[in-house]
Length: 138
Length: 180
Image 1 (cartoon, each protein chain N blue to C red):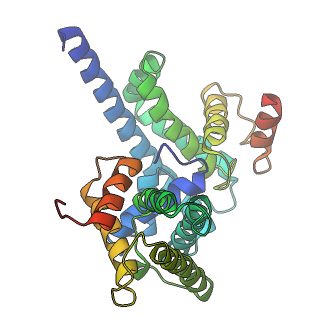
Image 2: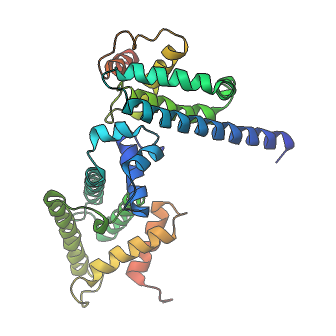
Image 3: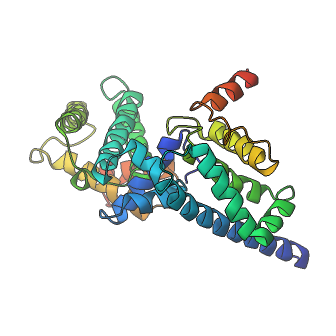
C-alpha cells in the first residue's frame, strides 16, 4: 500500500470515527430533548437540538462538512444521521423506505442548516415531505 | 444498521434479532442506539421489548414462508428443493439469529411455526419415498438432524455465502462424513 493511499485510508477511518461520534452525540441529545419536549412539535425539538449540538461541536461539524464531498464512505455514513433526523422529527415512519427517509432527513437538515426551516413555525403533517419527494421522482 | 434492509422497520427488527440472540435481556434503548434511531421512535411502535421480540419472531416466520414457497418442497425435484430450502433457511437464520426458544411465542406464531415444520416433515417423507434419504431411522431423527446440521454449519461457515454453505450442508446431510 502506498503512503498516499495509507494516509487516505487513515483519513477515511478518522472521518468515519468522527461521524460516529457526532451521531452518538446527536442521538443522546435527541433522546433527552424528545423526552422533555412536552407539546412542542417534534420538528422544532429536533431542529433546535441539532442546532444546539452543532454549535457546541463547531469544529467537528466543520471537519465533517468540509470532507463530505470527497468521501463516499462519509456520505453513506451521513445517511444514518439523515434517517435519524427524519424519524425523530416524525417526518418519516418506520414503514417508510430507508433511502427515501434519508432524502427527507437530508432536506430537513438542509433547511435547518440554511435557516429556511418551515418546521418550527408550521409543523408539517407526518410524511408529507416523503410523499412530495416520491411524487417528484416519478 | 444493515445495508440490505429496505424499510426502517426491517433495519430495527434485524438489529433487534442480532442483539437479542446475543443477550435476550438487551433493552429497547440499546437496540434503538445500535440501529441508529432515537429510542422514542422505537417506543412509538413497540410498547416494550416483548412486543419487539414478537415482531422479530413474526418477521422471521414471514421470511421462512418465502423460503418454503421458493423451494417448492412438494413439487420440485427433491434434491433441488432440498438445496433451495437449506440455502434459504441459512440466509434467514443469519438475518434473524434468534431461535424459537428465545421467542415469546403467541398462539398465531406457534401455529405458523407448527405448519412450517409440518411442510418440512412432508418433504422429508417425500424424500424417503423417492429414496434420496433413508427411511429406517426412528421418527423425527432426519428432521432434527437436518436442522442441527443447518444450524451448526451456518454458524461455523459464517465466511461462506448461503449458497456455498448449503452445498456443504446438503452434501454432509446426504453423505455424512464417510470417505466413500
